[in-house]
Image (cartoon, rainbow, N blue to C red; front, top):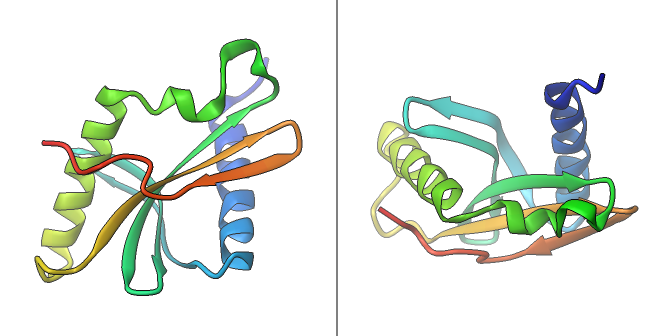
Length: 118
């Protein structure tokens, strides 16, 4: 049986490497709090970027980014707000929510994949 947590950790590591090659500066991995979890937190220019990593072996279950549904977006948004508050980030800090999707040997980075949701 496949250990989903181990597979997830492997692709989060690969995503971090890929994103760094694209100019992102990874600052936090696997931020967890009562509100939810954020796979990667990075800086991209002036932006603080909250990144959800999704992997699919093939398209049988749909595109990986399709798994970042409204419920998941809300959890990520709440965790991001908590992270900013806990770490004293100023309210004017520009933030963005990206999705790093991997399928069949290819990475797709969707910048600004969704807006902050309450």
